[in-house]
Image 1: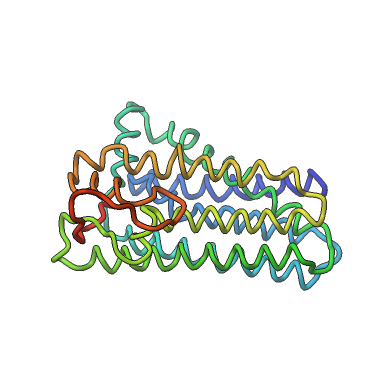
Image 2 (image 1 turned 30 degrees about the vertical axis):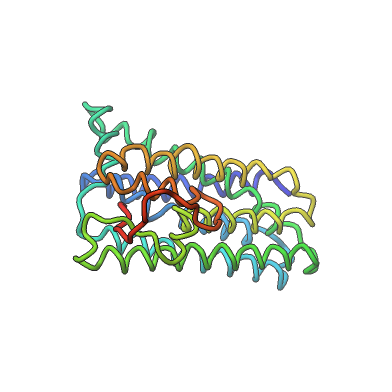
Length: 268
């Protein structure tokens, strides 16, 4: 594992984030960074795989899994946000860092997320640059990726379909996968990256565990569950009952609560 190859991944990510930042300044919308988050990791993976002398079937498999995950997630976010104004989270950040937010956003939004993506891509650097044959841990990695991809894809689809029905306005989604976890898409994302970590272990990359640990922390405490639910109860009172009856992250049977639970719309 050559650190120079790993550093090339960072360089490629920063080029992408800088170009996206320039577009965000023209659009006055930094939330477009969400649509390229997965592409940052795909770009890093492509750089790592392009710098090895021996390209194996295992490398092709890993790169294909990254490609499928990245393109699906990016398209989902871009389509979801198309024609919408800047996301509420970023409007709050913009207000906090004015004046000259346009310039400041390069560092606090785009470079920051680029650095996070670079760290999280660490298992891919190990897995894609050291050629080995497919083994037992790779089967486990594929299984984890498949489970995670199913949760993320189906969860996103169920939420989009639910929010697309005007009759569900002001309600909370608690059916389908959302009956067992309040964030099936975040859970799926987490499982996918623990799967990618499994690919790194057979090549001596066990120490890249920092990547899935960081992602798990981000999804639970930083930009995922905690941030999303910070103000949601105030905006959607029915969400409190949903919290009491449904696991936050890891899927599990719905909990029994005193009040009967009805199907409401899940706030986005």
